[in-house]
Length: 328
Image 1 (cartoon, rainbow, N blue to C red):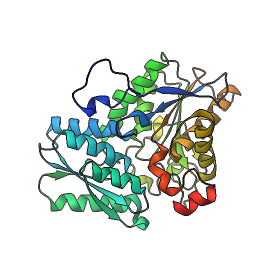
Image 2 (image 1 turned 120 degrees about the horizontal axis):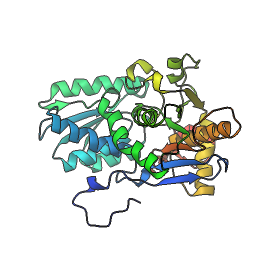
Image 3 (image 1 turned 135 degrees about the vertical axis):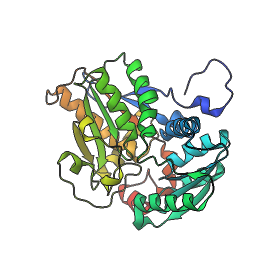
Image 4 (image 1 turned 45 degrees about the vertical axis):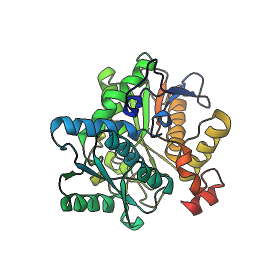
């Protein structure tokens, strides 16, 4: 839990400074540490961009006081932006593909946001298009657009990354993180490269996602169950910079699901499928460093656990893989 020694004026002051916790299933010689983002007030890493982006847009005049933000989101960004919007006297509308977690939609609504759902088959690209249509129809409305807004990357460069490096006294050998908008990984990667260009940077995506093609790799474009990361249309994910990434590692739905269950039963982490995927990839990278397959400047791996499994209980996330597949 975020440690504060004095009373705070707003819930926004509790965003960030989340714990960095060791993943004990990794090699002892190359420990893996995960930034546990469920300790944010909205229980996800997206609280960081919710606060950072809206405050910056207000400061720059991109967003007028009392205005409306319209954002396409799988849910966590909506929750983070809804928290920030409520405290900054802004209205919020979120466009969510139908397949995504009902819990997230209910939380956004509880925070005062309006929810617009779009067909599952249209995916995030369809939600993006609908968000711009809605903003054009309303007065004083803007689309922050987490998929293309550099403030998304800047939020993690200014907050998440320094927290990780400070906690490890700069001794980071590899950075491993899931990519959806790519904001988290790009912020971490940019900061890491400034500390030591030799730090190994790994993007994590589900099998079936298409980020690997941007680094010349192969990908079998197909549906996947892991929520919050991956893309079927990498050209829409404008923040991803291949020059900052050493490799893309794909993780199967089955491996991510098995790992999120292991993290709960063995290590006490209640996390979602994107954290399961990040943990699988981070452990594999640590094993590669330990075995001499990856030359890293330090014997440690940093990753991010983006959110909580409580967001996905209606999808039977702790059931069998088949039950989870059926409900997702």
